[in-house]
Image 1 (tube, rainbow, N blue to C red):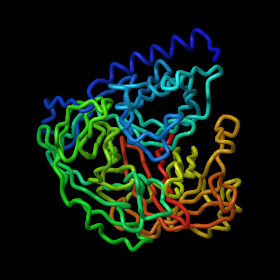
Image 2 (image 1 turned 180 degrees about the vertical axis):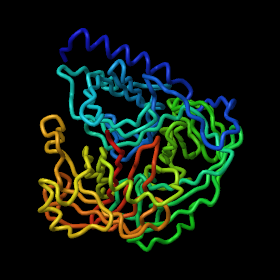
Image 3 (image 1 turned 60 degrees about the horizontal axis):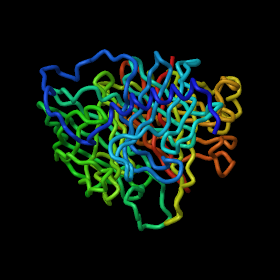
Length: 462
């Protein structure tokens, strides 16, 4: 494929930078993780920043599925980004998958343009547009969705947890496709009728040891909200420096291996907690080409995303904010079909029921107890269509179950929403968590309609 010299030079600069982040997948340097602060200390970050991201079902290399965590390096100053994988078949160390340039638009939205795919040895001229990221202030974390891939949460795991008092987190499962057969095959799909949808955990730390206690996990309220008895009630993890950042693995077995050689890697949950933000992200997926199981210390499916539990009721605060984020429908996957019918769309939420373009949709949903309206962008294009559609509503419910936890939430989907297969307005029950990360509001939602799981991740925008 023809390409220009400047794009080629830019790609190899990104590739070299990402390779420096690679090396041994889990070579832990257990040192300097202790401290006396009552919470994680804040560290000033600067561009470029590398983020840990869990595998999310639907992510591919272009020719096959990927089942390992990724890193994303974002350079806001240099206006470049790269996506890196580790432990690919027959490829030791790190491998840049996609690289490109970024621009910052309205409300802080990052528009990403892919200029090269190193795994497929392809250069793109013109660049491939249609990828987006939402970053927290100070590059503390965020959300990313590359073209053709589902949204993934990002966390800058720059430090190990440094808690001298217990910090309670609430979390939601990152859903995987809902299989039409009870036989899972690859061990990564999510069964919402029996597996974890939401939960809470108390986290403390001492040096490199991270202790997770009082782990409580439940199925969706619509599926009975029963406690998942097979989930662990406690776990001990080890934190240290890895290619993904300062990651905690649970159980805390130190692993020094090169999965590119096809070795079996023990099932370990990989947890990143942002020092600046408190955002929690866990990857549950199988690691290494020979691995056949996964560890769901928190959540199920592809992993979990969590927020510190608020000390008070913040409902009125979170529904009064403006948000950018993504709506991910994990899809259904007939067993052995090879692909899931998932969808993922950039979204904006900030409308009231009386807003222009929202009145007719609000009339169909009826009054919301504590809700916000929003939706996707026409053709997923926020530049041509600067205002998102009003074809989605999130109602947290009349009361919270506990601070920041809403087990009586409802999601409404309009007939014109791009991911609405039925093309008629309908609603389904959901569970939501809300809180603050880096002094910004966040709302995460999980539910299942009659055909598939849905996840919504929203971060307060400018």
